[in-house]
Image (cartoon, rainbow, N blue to C red; front, side, top):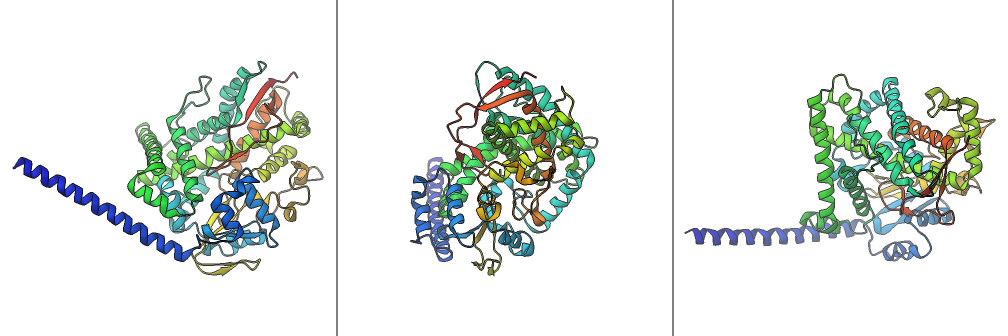
Length: 499
């Protein structure tokens, strides 16, 4: 009987596996059929063929530069990649229409949640409607308070003085090469974990410890970006269903991220949160659902770590190639700060117009989020006359917009902070011309905190060190991901300044 029972169980298991596999094949077939009816993966137009065959890579180092090339040639500043069902625009009027005028018709959409939901869950960057409104209201109240901004500046100051400066000093003067991109990732990860969780991973200690959380986060980010570039989404969906290949790696990485984040939440509950300033403690006062809390915090980690590190990396890359800008920042700082002062106050940062212009100019050329997509709810026509079909993706492209002659003039490819100054004072531009922090109802709530962190780091390092790219003849190449980064990092040589 035992043998018969065992055989019966094996037989049932085999039948179940075959049935499941057959169902998966059938589901994939019908999903593919629906996809083929909705978009044009067979499109033979020049742009689509270049995308599918990757022939664009013969002339361009990365996809964003190719898109920029196509958008610059387009009379309307808008193009179509039919195989992706994607309308891409660098037209400021279209951007304002999408992010403000017809905001309700261009949500993130269910398609976006499918792409990133495995990592972000119901976090603010992956949802619409009431959930988005609730989280945004909560975040707005917390991030906009003077106390939280002071708390953030204290954390940044401590990380700069106790870890970042000592680390760079240890590399200074001996011609050792430091990967500045990796350094800034560690710096921003320490900061956002302390700010979000009230816990310190210590990634920037001189021993350079490896964080499983950070490694898993990078892996998940890169694999999710691969999903977004897929011509046939059904392929990654099929791989996810059967837990194969890249989707298996993604699942494992997300499991590590969420397990460690969940552990942090439990630790915070044990330690108490009523008298704490970190973001998690503040949210815990209003939310009892730990899964929901986890989704929210993972979203803030993504926003606070990668974007700040990306912005700082590109800033110092540009500064290394433009020493006259570095000199102007130093001269301005010397007029406002004391000789041995590393960190500026909020008031001092506000008075440094040239520094502010330099940071904005760097983000214009190298926005941390190079493009952002929405999904059209109902058939529509953009201001430039482009028809957008219901259910298709609409992407506005800050990276390309920063390189458009029609927006910034014939010198748009130059790093020129002066374009932001009028009579020596910083003057902001129309946010729909410069959607680096998004614009409209979804404008970035962490904008001021991110700028404070970037400017604080920039000042501290520029006043103390000369930081130069190790190979000035090698232009940095972009790496694919949810946020912008340089392929191979940013190798630099550091020297202490003799003041």
